[in-house]
Image (cartoon, rainbow, N blue to C red; front, top):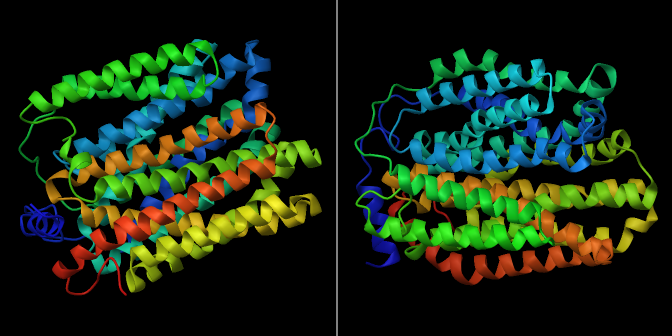
Length: 471
């Protein structure tokens, strides 16, 4: 079956309730999702600024304190994949409710914890619930909004993500400084206020036929966890052991998927069609975009001696600009297509990286201005790639595919961050690391231009009001 026939056939075979049929949620649901993402994404970064205080109060090493963030990241990556797969079978309203309630339970556990073990339990439970939000937030536009409006909706969602990434460190510093770092857990309880409005906005759905391959899910979850451990221990002897165990579980998962009639994740997602190339392009861009959020604070601290509070202020203008431009980027995606937007966004990011590499010595305000270009480019990539992936996936694999997309988006940042910090530890300059990121984006542009452009254009024939690529 050709790529064109496969995509068109998948569109023709959309089952009821999975496409744009039946009662549709109103525009207000986008802002409800934005509020949820604000709490979920912000919760990733607010604790980073409090790690020194946690280490001191708990009388534990910095490495143990780091597991407050590392453990959260690990469960977050696994959970986003799991909830995405579950969305192919279960109503989104039920999954969202379960996720938000678990998120709140973990927040309370963390706040009342009296020792490191319970603190970590609370953080992991928090992450298990919070991971439902990004995975399902991307499902809602893909399932309920027509292709010609999908870019605008995903642009709004990307704006909220950019804003929450920018204000997270600032709010974390303020709350931890004015009260106590434990009060950071209570910020997440705001999701309970949003929950009843979200339940009212989501359409009724029924349980779809199908089963979950629990053995396959366990093998894949173990492989992802070991991959995260390999990343976080990169450069040590443990990384080799974790990496070997990860490869073993991945082989067992592939063997299981080939034998199962209903595999947890169909291997054809990665062997057929354009989805695999879109995931590759997303990996390359996210690896640089999320790494930038780690490298720039290190550079500001090392070069200019700034503390966490002042670093947050330097980062904030770029995050605000990205949040403001995200909605516009979504509209442009709907108007001009995902492929031109991906190329333009990568160009913006590369320009920003080159300027940062060459001009960062000039002062803090120069860094703040140069950061605006890559931040805007990254939020454009998020919305354009989200729409592209949603159009490349068949209806019966939409949840699993968007779950893989969310997990890749998250894990690529962890991999990029590990590579960047290792390069810095080995003596590479900040300018060299930034230029390496620009090279990664050049590779992404080649994938988009010479592989995805032609394949994505094949889908335009089955869409009357919008196309993925307009020439």
